[in-house]
Image (cartoon, rainbow, N blue to C red):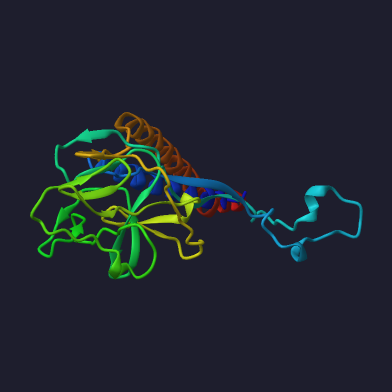
Length: 271
């Protein structure tokens, strides 16, 4: 009797542990403005089906299809973590009354400048720094629309008058238009990955493609809330915990089988 099935159960336990970590992170950020929930995607990895054609053992005599693979009890199926995907669905609108809080209602990302280049964010909690530049809560310059050198696209204000940001992203200081916020959309959002501080960058193996949002809808004095549904996350956590416990019981069962094969069966055979 083979006990290699323990590896299948172990892969399942590891997958559920990874899913629990993701759910816990979602719950921890339920009140983080602009946070987008993550989810784990898994698939079944069938070792026999993943074999290259050159290892197929085709018999020279009539045989069943099952004998085409020299399995020797070693081929199993495993849980294969495909990756972490972000749910970019819209979060609710929370009124703050702060003139420099701007929420995106619909598609789009703000462009901000970082030491490592342009990054994207959905969080529009802005302020003016000591130089009059419009920056994020982490002090990163917010980009104005247009191409070219990011250093030429920073938004500067004198600080003498209040800023007003219209629904289409135009920034006014008093009655004077000084810039227009850069709002871009990513055609393939699966190409994005989180890098912390509510920022996104493109995955290393993805094409960095963005397009301008022609008709953005911004709401001044609002923040976009997290799109985490706490009831859904708690339900998923309970289901995942139960699945994890089931895989642990399976591992224990295989461990018991192995113990009997090593310690009990030889004694019976010699008796």
